[in-house]
Amino acid sequence: MTVNMTKGQAISLQKSDGGTLTAVRMGLGWQAAPRRGLFGSRTREIDLDASAVLFADKQPVDVVFFRHLVSDDGSVKHTGDNLVGGAGSGGDDEAILVDLQRIPVHIDQIVFTVNSFTGQTFQEVQNAFCRIVDETNGQELARYTLDGGGQYTAQIMAKVHRAGSGWQMTALGNPANGRTFQDLMPSILPHL
Image 1 (cartoon, rainbow, N blue to C red):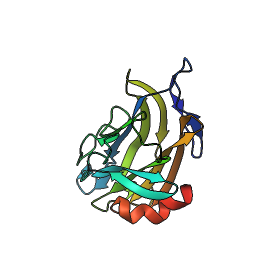
Image 2 (image 1 turned 45 degrees about the vertical axis):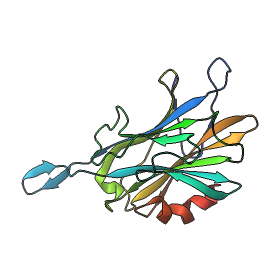
Image 3 (image 1 turned 180 degrees about the horizontal axis):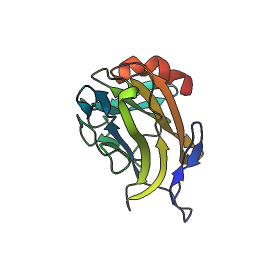
């Protein structure tokens, strides 16, 4: 059963039977919002990019994004860049796979971001979401709707962090501005 998350909400990443999740997928989906023009409604392609920044004791140690698809240790993988979106409330336009068992012990947090590489604002986006899926069986565990409509070009979506012997996901949903994950670092750091 999917949990529809609210900003700031945290959930444990455990299976419904109490077992530990071994691999999850952070999916991102979006659609271009129709714009009214002289000749009726039309949409423009929107290029959003998902990134995962891996932290050890509040220090960034690796990143996975469209130009670096696999973390140095191989535990986090980006499935590839989608330049137009379109899934919206359906499937994922971009996804990042996380093998929780392979993440080195010193990595304690992974922060997921989304940014508009082309500089379009979230006013031009609709039906944007991030979701976490149990990669072993395809079951959606949690979904967080990314509020649109703002004059910002990025969001700090969520983080997956160690909690005792397991992992938790926290929905963040904080607007930010920047075209790349590097631009977002000052906005990420307060959430660690």
